[in-house]
Image 1 (cartoon, rainbow, N blue to C red):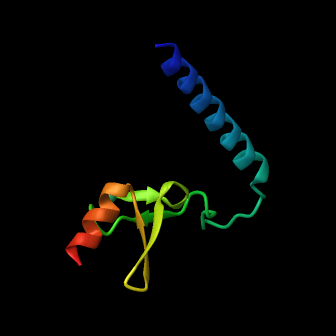
Image 2: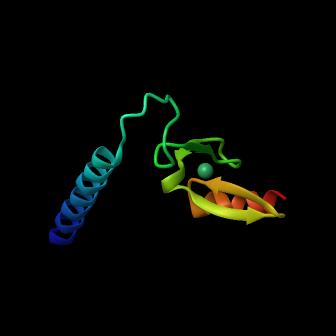
Length: 80
Ligand SMILES: [Zn+2]
């Protein structure tokens, strides 16, 4: 239980830190294009969109794909 609390707090602080960095790092460009942090990529296995920063990047048959989880990496590789 204590461990769970600890990891919860840790995740919260990491989340707050990332938000702070993103807020301070953002310029005042009126461009609608989002930065690399907010870029969404599609998992070719389950077709879910995930933030590029959270995705697992894997090269399959010379092509780079982004996956939501290791499970999808394995499933996609088995499909090919
Ligand atoms: Zn997936």
